[in-house]
Each structure stands twice: as C-alpha cells, then as structure tokens.
Amino acid sequence: MKLINIEGYIQTKIASYLINLYPYPRPIYLIKAGYTNYLLDKKCGGDDQLNEQGLKFAKYINIFFENEVQTEEEFKQSTQPVKILCSTLKRAISTAEQIKLGVEPIKIKNLDQINYGLWDSLTEGEIEKRFPELYQEKVQDSYRFRYPRGESYSDLVQRIVPVIFEIERSQSPVIVVAHLSTLRCIYAYFTKNEIREMPHIDIPYNSLIKLIPEVYFCGEKRSF
Image (tube, rainbow, N blue to C red; front, top):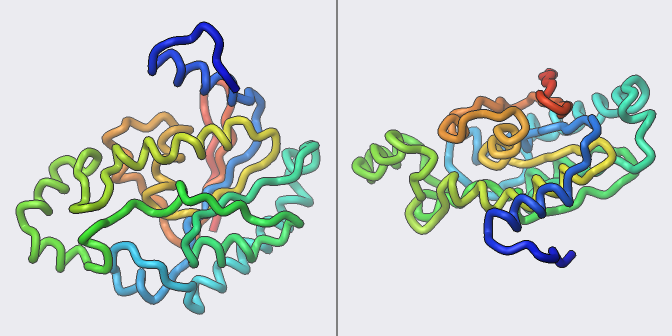
C-alpha cells in the first residue's frame, strides 16, 4: 500500500504500524522449537532435527491445541483460520507440523534464530576460552553485541518487525514456533519489556506462552 503525503522514516514506520494494527484481543502462542541432540550438547546455532524428547514435546503441543480449540472462546469466536508461523529451520518445522489444526505452517525466514556467525556450533565455554575479549563485550552489552560475521539483537529486532506486523494484523489466534532469540523479540514487544532486558528473557524448553494483547496491557499464561 502506498502511503500518501507521508514523508520521513519515523512517520512511515508509524503509519505502517497503524495500517497493520488489529485492536481486538486474540491469543498469541509462543513455542520454542523442541530439543535436538545438537542443543543438548549446548552448542550455539545449528539446524538439527528433533530428537526423541523434542518429538514427544511436539506431539504434546498438538494435544494441548486440540483441547484449546474445544474450550477457549477465542477459537470458537474466530471467523478466520488459525495461523501457524514457524522458522525455516528443521526443528521448528517439525514441531509446527505436529500441530494438526487443518492449516499448513507458514515458514518465515525472518523467524530463524539469531545468526551466530563464526561462533555457530561452539559451546559457551569454548567461546569464552577462544574469544575472551569478545566474550566480555557480549557479557557487558548483550543487546548491541554483534556475533563475528553474524547478527546482534539490535539487528534481529529489525528482522522481526515484518513478523510483528503479520501478528498485529491477524484477526485469528496465532501460533509462533521459533527459537529463543526470535521469541524474545516478539515477547518483549507485546509485554513492553525494556529493550536491554531482551537478551535475558527466560523462555524455557518444553513450555508454551500464551499472550492475549489488550488495549493497555498483555495477559500472559505459561503452560507445561
């Protein structure tokens, strides 16, 4: 859509936000993609398939939504089909595909985990040992620190903006299956967390966060 008589970066961003805003409560479900052996080894990044534990969690998620459809008014009253958004990484796709609500997951590259660059596949201990000075920079400012040849949380926020718009304009429940870094950005936006708190927001594995945005606040419920 072309914005008429609007000039300037900030003005255009505000107008785009208002165009995409749907000011009625509908649930947003945030789910961190299930466990893989790669992640159990505490390595950064990677694109491994779900292991047995991860697949078990994904199937349990489906049972949760089967019940949610039957009991929650937001599902009963919605005139639009639910949206399932997921990243393009294997573990997120496999988790999303276990949710049997009659719709296909929408794979969105913007929901991929933060780019760890040269640190991909390394553990926290290996990073601290091999890159002590850079590691301290990360500890001191986790929001602005950019992984070598990778991204910072500041970069990631810009990448997530189109996903936020997609969620905001939705008139039906939205399920987001992604990764810790990208879910932190979405969660921080809806719950109005301070921007520097974003890299430290706790979103555990094998859990589900249900957000219901209202006019001046956002309701939250955690399951599992």
